[in-house]
Length: 292
Ligand SMILES: [Zn+2]
Ligand SMILES: [Zn+2]
Image 1 (cartoon, helix red, strand yellow):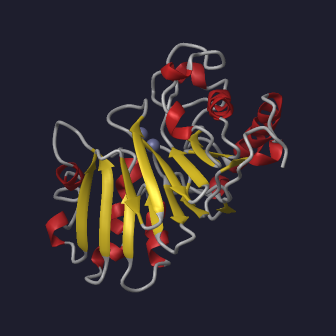
Image 2 (cartoon, helix red, strand yellow):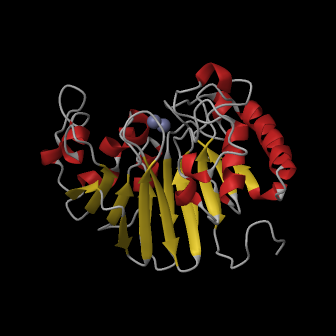
């Protein structure tokens, strides 16, 4: 599998001269399967430029973790939405309140939008989850509710022996220590177990987190402790706070690598997500922590 990051920012787009390298676009990740199919993880503002790169007559699967604006804002500007030859399937969390289509239509409708969902020329379908496990191309997709604000999913995508887990908005525990907690009390534990790549929320530096407990996001050490507890082999820290400049994120990366090493892992296998960044992900039969 191949991953390309089109937006790594959390909460709100954060463009500007201090944000050039890590980028200002919100959550958008392209996952290319070895079979050639592709899954688009969330549709933050990064999906606009992603859409420009797609070939004619695209068939696209979009997996939405939740409907906070930073994860759907790009949808209305996603070029395939305006092509009659495009087929778009949008998966997202079910809610007792209203269907996925009706909830997305609150954004893609007047007065927030000049077009309505029914006016889009593409062929679009909305798939409320559950199901919690289904096939897309050669991949198996598993979703599970995770702890955030409002109905929110994480996704586990497996193709062959390779697994990528995507949990961009996540607070694995509330008001307790992660290090020794029984796994059944850790949100997202089974979903992320033994992932070859875990893309995970890292909204806050550790010193910022205490003022944001319960906001639905992770401090860096919690993100890495979670990754280590689940046995993730490689970690991409994601959903950067809009206040975090390039130089701040560079320093955070240094801290993250030291922390990941303290947890007994290879510091080269933790990285800050960067707009435009690409990763090849390959599975391994080795248990986590065993040097290859
Ligand atoms: Zn978010
Ligand atoms: Zn959110």
